[in-house]
Image (cartoon, rainbow, N blue to C red):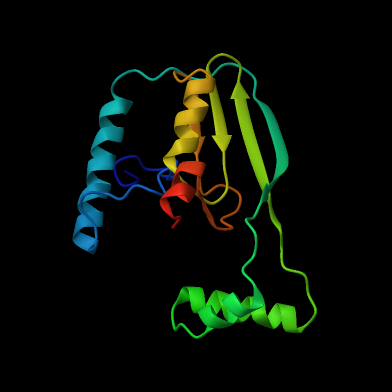
Amino acid sequence: MQKEHPGAIALTSIGCGADANPSERGSVEIATRQGRQIATEVARLLTSGLTPLSAPIATTLRRIDLPFDTHPTRAQWEATARQLDAAGHHARVNLARLDRGEQLQTALSYPIQTWNFSDQLAMVFLPGEVVVDYSLRLKREFDRNRIWINAYSNDVPCYIPSERILKEGGY
């Protein structure tokens, strides 16, 4: 895209799809082909007559606390710590914190940012690896024709599951 449009800077915006995987994945060739598909669609859209944003921007940034579930017991942490995977590493890190007398975090401070261009466009920026349920909810509760939801924004603290994903067993 940048080669075809000198002076332009291509940026990627990723929505809420932490629980979705592309049907094809796993190689540089596949990623390159998918990138070309995106570039082709952008080129098509650039010839379709875009509407410039004329409304002034209004921005917000608010933090909410996302509470964590109950922590495992020390015995559960110790059992998990014997694993050689990411869960085992996480358990060892938390056992070290407990051994130092530190309290374990009970909630995640979660910044939510919005950019609103009156009735033309509203953008929501959510940190982390966010599942699709949040996008669907925002589009249901607000004007789905003008809302644009971005995940992986401002911070990437962790996977952000919905109640549905938690009931399914999580990540």
